Image (cartoon, rainbow, N blue to C red; front, side):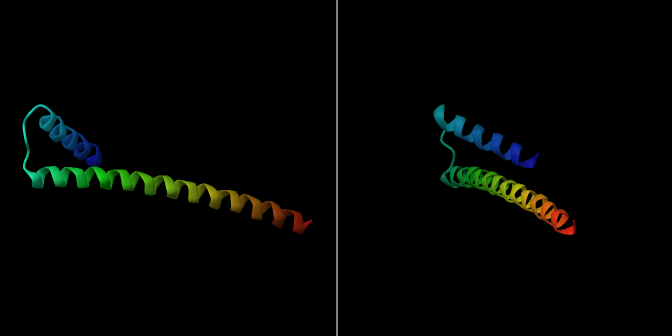
Length: 71
């Protein structure tokens, strides 16, 4: 929930900049850093999900092999 609020805050700052208001460079840089962090975190979450899916597939495969070997 906090990430969404930060993204909206960043979008608001960028909208102000587009309307002629100029936020301080520090604020703009902080806003950009937050957006970059959110994007990076989303990419990491997707990578983790892919890894978890692969791990689950490996577990299923290992279970099938173990069952076949037990017979």
